[in-house]
Amino acid sequence: MLHAMESALRQTPEREVKLKTGHLFRLPHFPGEPLPPRLFTSTYFDTADHRLAQLGVTLRRRTERYRVLWQLSLPRHAARLEVKMASGRSTPPAPLEDLLFALLQREPLTVIAKLRTRRSGIRIQPLDRPIADVVIDRVRILNGRRVVGHLNEIEVERRSGKDKELAAIVTALREAGAYEGDGHPQVVQALNLIVSSPSPSKSAPLSERFKTILQTQLRHILLHDPGTRLGKDSEELHQMRVGIRRFRAILRTARALLEPEWYASLQEELRWLGMMLGTVRDQDVLLDRLYTEADVLPPVERKIFERLLTTFETHRSQARMQLLDTLRSDRYLNLLRRLEQATQAPALREAPESSLIHLAAQEFKQLIKAGKRGNDEPSDQELHQLRIHTKRTRYVAELALETMGKPAIRFVRQTKRNQDLLGDHQDAVFTEERLRQLLQTTRGVKTAFAIGQIIERLRARRRRTRAMLPREWAKLKKRGREVFAL
Image 1 (cartoon, one colour):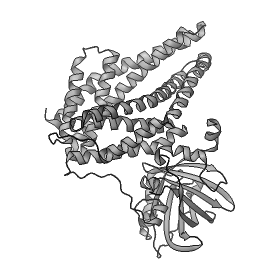
Image 2 (cartoon, rainbow, N blue to C red):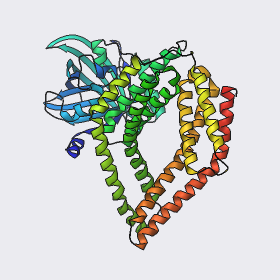
Image 3 (cartoon, one colour):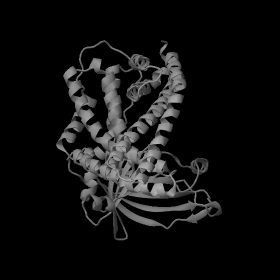
Image 4 (cartoon, rainbow, N blue to C red):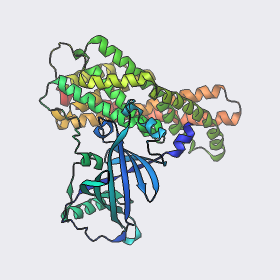
């Protein structure tokens, strides 16, 4: 059933710029070919309290010339992720509802709006190279068969154009009368919904900023949950896991403000979810690393080694099935509800008021202590612990960037460089451990030789990383002391 569901769904990234137009707007002359005119009707679904719209997510049933296509659209940085499914159903198909489990939390979907769109446009392609599609939507808002409103929108969708070329197109459109909108989906505009993103005031007390910061991380988790379920892009799972880690790091940093039992219980549940995601993520990283390393083997050894990778592919599939069971469980649903409650009314206790800068400084001190524990040749485990402390410090410093200025930006960049280096080292350690386990159950000299070659390459990578670490560690300490005056 899972395979059939994934085959029916198509995931595509969309990179686009959206502008509004008035009655006086006229499309500038662009070299290219006109796009075929289209007329379609979109029926939008959401919960009664507009859970999807509040996150910038849309679910619609689009009818065009008797063809029906369901589209789920999720916001991404400077883009949107589209999941499409052909189905003649009048109600949302089960596979799409399953993708939305975390966002809906078992609340029923209902029709919230119906829009009819006349679409025209041009494919800009000087010298037969398609740069972008400029699409003009003239939208009518329907109540039954009656038109109750309208809106006009221009969308510039990248084809093969570079950033400079797209910027020039957008500039020309603005000069012709187009202007920036609010960036919200058409259905949000049509219904005049009030949608707000978390934006803490710099002067707000830490307890209030804490709630807003948690809201941002919960939003990140929820928006990457559908892509994690779909499983077509490992980056989706990685980003969901990052959201969990950041949520945990924020709680840990602010634990002096929180009721101990409430804090410990929530951390335990987040740790559980993080472990389930981490099991699949580890397999993703492992397979990616092994396929990359296999590419440099001689053809015969590469063929032998790639056959062995089916074992890891099987492990990954099994871990993913367990993760999907987790993401459909009551325990996960209860955790999501607790996280939502934490963003609104965390269990705070009386504690001295602090600041994000102070908390970031405390994390940096812990990082320095962790770095001093190791000797000139730290063990793999010590480097792994140093990576964890580096990550925690980075997360908290990122939260305090607004109030710390340019030195903090340089510090955060350096923590990321160190984290990436230590991450590469840990990935190599983990990969070698798994290969050694495989070696114990493998027969054949040629197979053992191929595995041995990969292990030697991994060890060489670790040596290079270790050689770079002292210099980068010194830079990190310098940047941190510039920021925190330690």
